[in-house]
Amino acid sequence: MEKAQRFEDLIVWQKAHKLVLAIYSLSSKFPSNEMYGLTSQLRRAAVSVPSNIAEGFKRIGANDKLRFYNIAESSQEEVKYQLLLANDLQYSNTKDLILQLEEVSKILNGLIKSFKKTNI
Image (cartoon, rainbow, N blue to C red; front, side):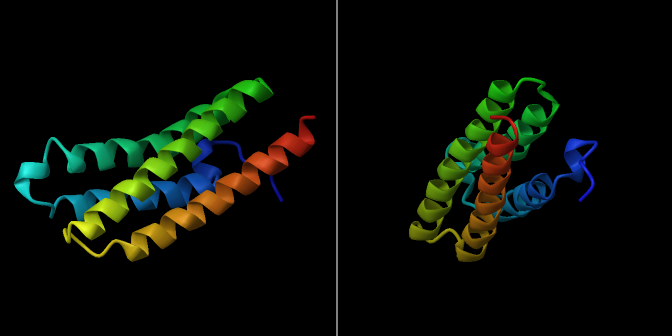
């Protein structure tokens, strides 16, 4: 497999970006009183995932890279909770987005594990 030259080449970034677009679309339908609440929180957390993948990609040191990838993982958990909350508040059915998020999580976890193995 050819080594990624840009963060946009990473499958995990591509899927995380696609998820962000879906979350923006979904959250645009939330009640207007959530504009500065759940809508804003969910969008920020979602954007944090591919943003930290991109930033980590460009870092040179192994610890730096892993730190940003770990922040992306943490943001994923925040997004998961917020999607669960949106579902429970009956703003939307978020099950499909949660499945997409879990796929991103698995790929990112694999990237982190492979990176740790090659940089021991």
